[in-house]
Amino acid sequence: MISQLMSEMINRQINAELWSAYLYQAMSLDLESKNLSGMAKWFSVQAQEELQHAHSLEAYLNGQNAKVELFAIDKVPTSWSTPLEMMEAALDHEMAVTEMINNLMKQANKEQDFATQHKLMQFVDEQMEEEALFHSMVYKFRETQRNPCLTRILDQQMHSRKLEQKIQGRAEHWL
Ligand SMILES: [Fe+2]
Image (tube, rainbow, N blue to C red; front, side, top):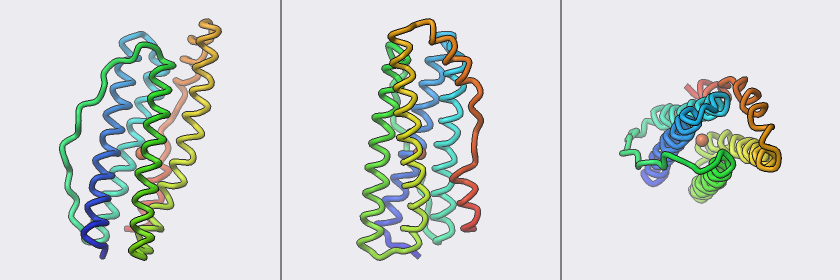
């Protein structure tokens, strides 16, 4: 059993993960409309990963006999002027999510809630990976600004991204 406050904070995180899925799906759709279907696929996979994060936290709350509340999802931006600007916005968003996870972890530590700390470690790991990934993508996108011919090559490369079951796989262990 977890505290009421911890449960509320995790419910807010579920909403943030769903908002992330909305954001990345909007990015995917914007790229698709600009005929960059490989980049669109990459962001669509990212959106699915965010849904996994939300589902994993839902499963955790259920397992702790706490109520899952699905709050309304705020509107997301719908267009970006360049793919680079989009990727920079995505990196900023991931850094903000890391801050949210850190705040959850601070509360779990304060409450000596060891189960939630253990669960959140998956997300700490995930955010380390996400920030490294998005940093490297920003770097690649900056190169396309200098050399626009690389845009098509990068678009083709990004098409190969496949959905991984990282967080969800570990979450099943909890049930
Ligand atoms: Fe996430």
